[in-house]
Length: 143
Image (tube, rainbow, N blue to C red):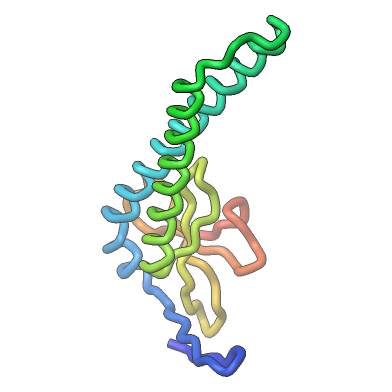
């Protein structure tokens, strides 16, 4: 671990080994499965809202089904909150979520004295790649 000073507080930076991240893969998979499902729910509700808005526009201001509209807004709020809670779980584990669509999560790692990211993608069963802090998934390198 490394300590750094920021605004009067000591922040500890944890560095992960590939084995430590691999031990988290079952939990990461469960979290990302839920995040991706909630993301799909959001897309479905948004598509339904968009269709309803088009229908209203095409008919010159038809009556809105207020109950359905409220139900959709509640579903959006619930799915968004679920995603946020699950992403906070990843943060508490020490990961940094990079892409919800593909389920990318990075974990800080010391490699030959340099801080890099161990890279996990949803569906992977082991940690096999890393990339620099200023690089992304496209520049992953094998361990």
